[in-house]
Structures are given as C-alpha cells and as structure tokens.
Length: 234
Image: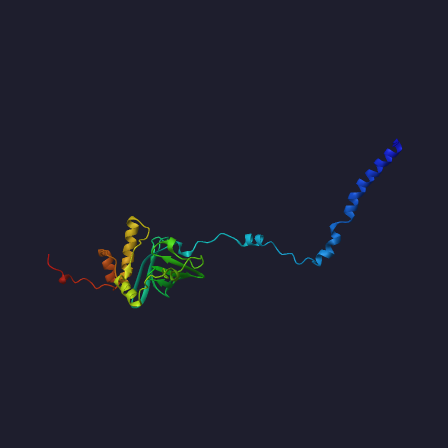
C-alpha cells in the first residue's frame, strides 16, 4: 500500500468514528416513546417490596405490656378479673366483670380454669395470664387461645360441668402472682387493693387493716364503726 492509499484509509476511519455518535444521537430513544405509551407489554406494576418498605414502620407495643394479672374469682354472678397497671405511679388496680370497662379497657372474656383474661382497648384485643406475659395469647399475634389449650390429650378424662363447678367454688380466689413491686410501694399497693376488695364485697386478702385504712372505710360507710362499749375491759 502506497502512502496515498494509507492516508485515505485513515481519513475514512476517522470519518466513521465521528459520524457514529452523531447518528446515535439523531436516533434517540424518544422515537420509541409513542410505542411504549401504548403499553404493548402490559401495564408496569410497582415493586411490591418497595411498597412494603414504605408501609412498614415501628410496631407499637401492646397496651397490655404494663398490665399484670393478679386475681381471678368466680361466683354465682360470674367471673371477675383483677389486674394492675404497674407503669402508673402509684400502680392502679382494676377489678372487672365480663363486659365492664374502665379507662377504656374492657374485659371481653375470661377463663377461670386457664386463669386467663381477654382485654380490649380500641381495636386491640390481647390475652393476659396469671402465669405471666409469656403465657398470654395475643388476639393479633397468632397465639393459641384458652379454648385450644383445653382440648387435652386423647383418652384424657374430661371433667363434667358439676365437677368443674365444684373445683371453682373450692378455690374462689387465686392469687399466684404478685405485682413486681418492692418495699413501701408493694405494701401501699396491697393496702389499696385490699380496700378495693372490701369496697366491692369481695373476699379480702389475708392481711390486717391498719387503723388508717379502717377509719377511711368507716368514713366511706363501707364498714360499721367500732363500738367501744363492746370491747372487753383491759
């Protein structure tokens, strides 16, 4: 190849390199936009994982996290459940029958045998248990309800209604768990709870009333005044 032919070949290559980007720019992707607007391949769906990430936020703890179940009783009028809000200062006691509500907390159901209670606040429903939080069955958490845990094993003898009723009446009040309090705070809570039980005509705890507690209940008309003349002479 002579010198003239070599120079001509170089010029052709340079012209090709220069024209190619211009051609690509001339035939931009916009020319296909009318076709894409007709969606020949169907409507483009959003990424579900991205949508889930937007909707997912911090999960609020259940309203029962600070509630400690401490008593369950049953008599001819039905079941009553006692529980304490240990987060309040001082702790507040509740003693509700099924269907009753206080501080927007409703006792929906209760199981005396399993020692569990179903509470509702707003749209939330959660089970609490005398055995502690680990044994509670949450209404929205997929836990087992007391009904499923009473089925028993095959061949196990099922108690009759009269036998179950006799067991219930033999142990009207069960207090197997105390609130997680200590010292004066625990003593004050038990005194308040004792007075609530007496006000509602329930079996009291095995503890004596202080003179101050007795005087307050007498002033409220819950207890009759002590007749000093009936006391034995010292």
